[in-house]
Image (cartoon, rainbow, N blue to C red):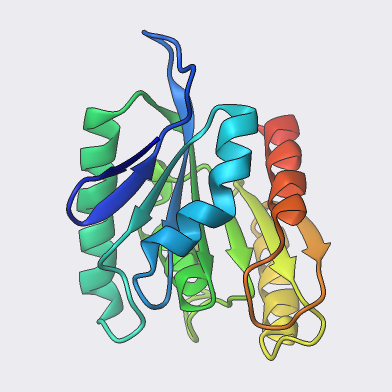
Length: 194
């Protein structure tokens, strides 16, 4: 079932148990296209009983600090309203949304367990010595994507900061990965929670 909560959409699968907490995927699109991000993760949400929230305000044209503060506020609201396991919060995004997910992991590390980056890269200059350590990252990469090399660079950087990483490739270029790739990412994440 999908709920529109103003600045974000939330997908919550049927059959959630009262009193139980569930992993949350918080998705960012470069164009504030929350629906496409929900659609990308809906199969995972149903199969694994995860919640998915997607920002309707995050977009490439905004200042990153302003965007990340809005996302932080939205995450807090989602965590308050829905049965979120705050130790299982995954940030994800396509392209600039992937950049925003990297940024959120850097500046709000206590609130992120993992990131899933779909054809996106870190912002230039963000790979600094004070980057957080020891989280999980899945890279959904297409060899024909213009961000492919930057994604390889980012993976190597995160590994130097003790992040456990998983690399998945799909054909198609700079676009959302197919549903089966998101499913592979979910299975890997569940096997590697700490």
